[in-house]
Amino acid sequence: MNKALYSLRLAASLPLYAVAILIWIEVTKTIVKSAVLVFTVYLTSYRFGEVLGVWIFCVLAAVIAYGVWLLGRYVRTSHFRTKPKPSSTDLP
Image (tube, rainbow, N blue to C red; front, side):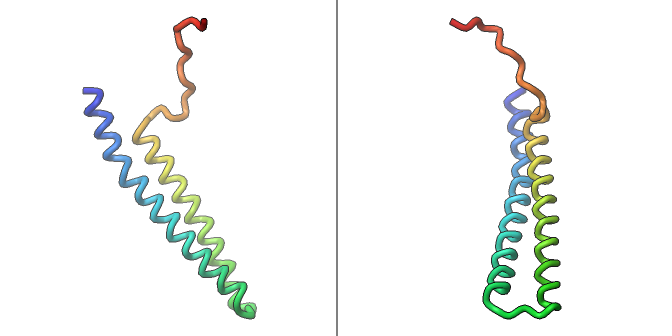
């Protein structure tokens, strides 16, 4: 039964991991595109505001993706923040 429960938890967490990875890929592509714009063209104040807004949005999206990643970890192992129990075996 425990193996089935682990399989269900893993299957439930995989879509969350996939969403987080896809968000990170999109954030990376957007940051690279805006960085190319910054370093290749003279920026007017309007363009600078656009780039700054895009970077702020990307930071927020990355934070959300990190939260989704942590949610996937919690679904997979609901005790990921607890300390491991000490071992009862004696050291040599």
